[in-house]
Image 1 (tube, rainbow, N blue to C red):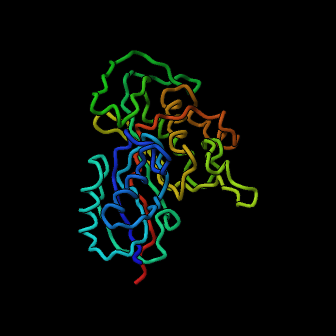
Image 2 (image 1 turned 30 degrees about the horizontal axis):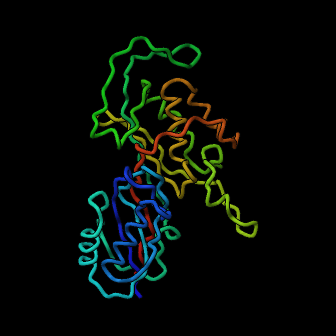
Image 3 (image 1 turned 60 degrees about the vertical axis):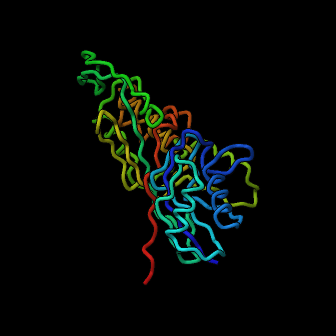
Length: 279
């Protein structure tokens, strides 16, 4: 048996997330079927993480073992012939037998994309909040872009977004920004508890091509964590929440204290980092 590592990209719009579900079209299910059609072997590829319904990937990683001897380039080409155009295998390679797409991962990077429907000129108040001086204009989100962004209805301040985002750098308990994971909720009492502690090494907003872009890198993410962070940061960027209130929200360990969950359409899994192979 050979252990395989795939890197794949996909448009998550038409799929019910990564994880296989009876009667539903998922990335894991499509990939398993493509592997079976290519090699005749039934395997369930393991992903680096379970992207939700409508979430996209630029660099998802999957691993599985095969008995069939096949050159990596041939496997990549064959799988891409079996998969729909919305799912592409970018690379395929044989890896050491202990490699696991999820368990071996060191860090993951996500990007969230926002298309602002309104822009405005803002000025600070003495209280530290902001007031809108005048509306500069409104924007129309192109239909070809809409499935891959959050068309946000509020004017946003890049400075306020970054001021809020800096507060999550380091190691924190992210219970406030985690949705209940249905798989973990169904665990038995004999199974270990799932820690809400995560370490964030990068958290920054930028702008490009009319979009607000948020990049975050961590050693792992809780269920809906990135989308809940973005929803809260946007409240700060729209001056509906003080950016410096983020530490208080973290300390509350209460999901109801934070902002709404941002739509899945704007979220991309960008890359997954692994230890360097030993020589």
